[in-house]
Length: 267
Image 1 (cartoon, rainbow, N blue to C red):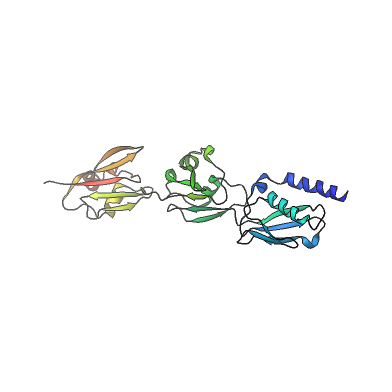
Image 2: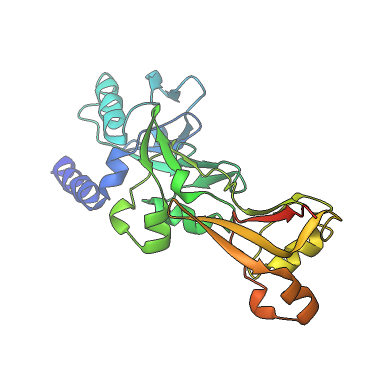
């Protein structure tokens, strides 16, 4: 009767436990608690060693890494049958060192994300800070030697939640740097250069940072070359009207990736 009551209690506990606990794969460094009903001297907290084993009194070393909780429980029960009649074993995860997601790439600070619960890609993206410097379109999740999801722009910018995949321990989220976060001033200026883009940057700001026109420049007009959705457009700016007459309609707001081209004069 005692064993039957304990069996019902254990069954209820396992039914109530979340499915993810059964799916969790034990790894090296994890801490487990092993409870054997009616055998208090055998109950103990165990650490999964670097060789993947745990040590239990009476049954010596048991392979734990690579097993699920239920698989390990079955193995411990099988070994304990040599010592105890009908052992009832419960194993719980106390601390996980095998539930990490790695966030890397030049677009963000490298981060190790500890998953204490079911975690999706959007949870991680929302936790790593600013993504302004990351190229979301070229980002991807890397798992078991292959990309399992690419291009985060739809998920993060437009709320395409169908792409919000559940992450697994050991996944790597790669966020490369967005290389078009500059504005480029080229041609007949004193200091041709790439200028870090910030919101609100204008043509005048860029020209001042480039040291104004060189003596060979055609100061009447410059061109802004802009690429959007794969199409290139050229925006003409009347620089004399801007600089000499204060026509601030010519002070065009720049976009990341714009090229400001100052042409040379032939006269």
